[in-house]
Length: 489
Image (cartoon, rainbow, N blue to C red):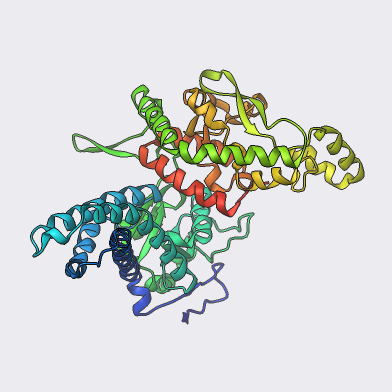
C-alpha cells in the first residue's frame, strides 16, 4: 500500500490508496465474482430439481442431463446482455433483471434439450422446479458473495467523492456503511477551507489546495471512478475534471441534490435537443392501485393454507400465556384520511397500564426514555409470548383481515396515528392517496432504528416509485429482516 506524504502547509489530509492490478481492475473482479456465483447457483438449482424429481419417482437420473451443464455458460451471456453486471443498479432493479434473465435461461435450456439426443429423457417438471429454485437461490447467492468478498476486501471499487456539502457527506457516509454497494470512498474533495461540524470518516482534501498545488493530483492516480456532486464544488475545479480533464477518471458519476429527481424509476425524456427527466408518481394512478389490489388478494388466497394454522397456533399460545383477549385493535389513519381499526395479536398483559406506572415509579431513570419515545426496550407490559411475537413481527398477522377488507395493502406506507401527521407536513396529502401497508420500505430499513424523518422520505419514495418489482423486493427483504429480528422492540 502506497502512502503519499503531504507538506505541512496544506490543510488537506492524504488518504492511503491501494495501487496495483487488483485495484485497477476492481470492476472486472466484481463482475467475475458475481458471474461465478450466478453460474454456480443456476447449476445448483437445476441439479436439485432433477434430483428431487427423479427421487420422488424412484427412477435413476438420466445421464443426458450432464450434457446440459456446459450450456449453462450461455447464462453468463444472457445475464450480461440483461445488464446484471453493470454498476449503479438498485437492489430492486437487480431483482427484476435477475428474475427475467433466469426465466430466459431456463426457457433456453428447455428449448435446447429438444435439439439434443434423447430429448424424451428431459422433464418439463425438472425445468419448472429448477426455475422456481433459481429465482430464489440466485439472488441469495449474490448476497452471500457480496458478504464474503466485502469481508476479505476483494469486493468494491475505490472512489473519490467530489463535493462535500450535505449531499456529498450523505453519499460518503452511505458508502462507508454499505460496502456491498460495490463502491467505497477513499477520499472526498471539499470546496470549503474550514472544517465542518461533523468529523468525516473519510480523508478530506480541499479543492483550494489542489488548485494551488497541482502536485497533489498524484494522489488520485489510484482511483478510476469519481462521484461528482455538481452543486457542491466550485466551477474552477469542475472545469479541471470535465473540460480540461486534468483529473482523468475512467468513470464519472454525476449526482444532483434535488430530492424531486432522486427517484428509482426516473425516465429520460428527449425534447428536441434537450434532455428531460420524467419523475415517477406511480401509485397515484388509479390503474396501478387496482393492479396492486388484485395482487394482494391473489397472494393472500395462495397463502391461506399456511396462514390459518399459524393463526390458530399463535392464538392458542396467547390464551395459555396470559388471561385476556386474543386480538386487539388500534385506530389508525388510512386512505383518504379515514380512520380504520388495525388488528393485531395481543402482546400485553390485561393490566398493562398499572404495570407500566409501577415500573416507571420504581425506575425514574427510564421515565425520561418513555416520555421522549413512548417506547421501552424492556417494557413490563409485554407478555412472554408477546415479546416473541413482536421480535418476529408475528403480532402483525391479523392485519391480513384489514387487507382483505380493503383498508390496508400487503406493502405500503406504515399506518399512522393523528399525532404523527405533523411529521409528514406537505407530503401528507400524497400519503393519504394510497393504502397503508403491513410492511414497507421503513420496515426493511431498520424499523425502530430508523429516524422519523427518514421514514417520511421512505414513504414518499415508495409512492413515487411503486412497481410490482418494488413490492416483490420489499416482501422478500421483509422475511429476512423479520427472521433476524432487526430493529424491533
